[in-house]
Every structure is written in C-alpha cells, then in structure tokens.
Image 1 (spheres, rainbow, N blue to C red):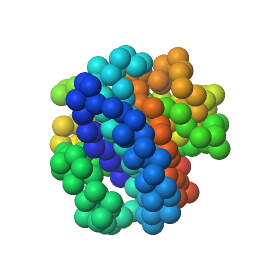
Image 2 (image 1 turned 120 degrees about the vertical axis):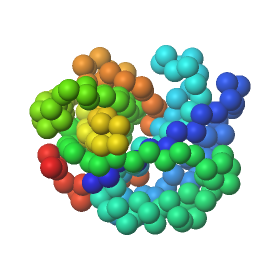
Image 3 (image 1 turned 120 degrees about the horizontal axis):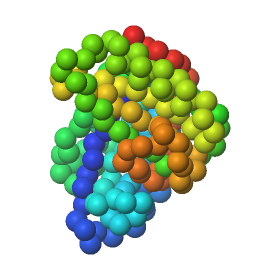
Image 4 (image 1 turned 135 degrees about the horizontal axis):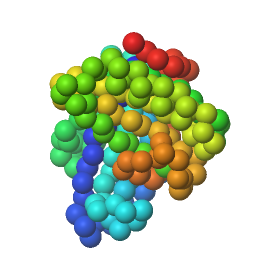
Length: 197
C-alpha cells in the first residue's frame, strides 16, 4: 500500500463552489480505476472548522504502485496540472490500514496528522505504538477507514482517518480536518487489513 496526497491552496476569496462542481462532475471517473484502493476528495474552506485556507487536497491509498504512476502520468492528473499548475505530490510507504465500523457509510470528513519521530527514538517502537493506536481507533464508532504511513526521508508518520460524520471528538480525530466531497473506492479489498511491515 502507498499513501499519496497533493494539496492545492487557493486564494482566500476563491469560490469553492468551483471545486465542488469539479468533483461532482469528475469524481466518478476514478470509481473503477484499477489499482486504486481509495481516493477521498477533500477540501478545506477558510474560516470553516478552523481552517486558515481554501484548499483542495485529495488523499489516496494505492493498492498498486504502478497504478499510482499511471494516474500521475495520465490524462486525469494532466487536467489538475492544466487547471492549477503542477502540485507537489507527497507519497508515503503504507504501514497499516483497517476499515472501521462505519466502513459501509459514506464518509463526510477525513483527518490527517503528521507526527515527527524524535531523533533519538527507536523507529520500530514508535511505529508499533502508532499501529496499536490505529488498531484501537479502527473500533471507534464513526470511523470509516484508518491508515498509517511512513516518510523515511523525514522520519514522519502520517495518520489518516475517514469519518462517517462531519464532527467527532475522538482522540484519533486530531489533525487537519477536510470535508469529503466524494469517495472513489474501487480496490479497498486489495489494501489489506492490519499491519503491513
């Protein structure tokens, strides 16, 4: 599994209805994209739920790295580049994925949090603790999906959770919050469940 995200930060006065219309008219195009586990079409709006920015920031879990490459070099992503410029695309090695009790409900939000490993920390111990946290989070009411990924270049953990409701107060809900406009999930069964290292 690979996790991936790009974030397009838009002007403060940008009409976010343009993004909403874009996702409504094009989001379904990845509903059967081979090799994609899931794509959460996320947005943040300035002044809503504490967001300081307008942002379009889809988050992906890929079952197949070749599919990720095919997407980035294909027509769909060319449209993003044409309309917004070529964004920085972050990607991380997947460590853990688990569907939650609300996996059959459409997700309304997702949270993403970055955790930097201390320089003197034992990486395997920190990661094992984070995986255990995601195992517990996956049993929490309202959780659609939770995943953990690693950036070994910066030694950062990426905590990603989809939620079935718009607001939540679980300890696992800490982080930047995005509204989910659409979920393409053609290959969640291929993402595996549980620890992946």
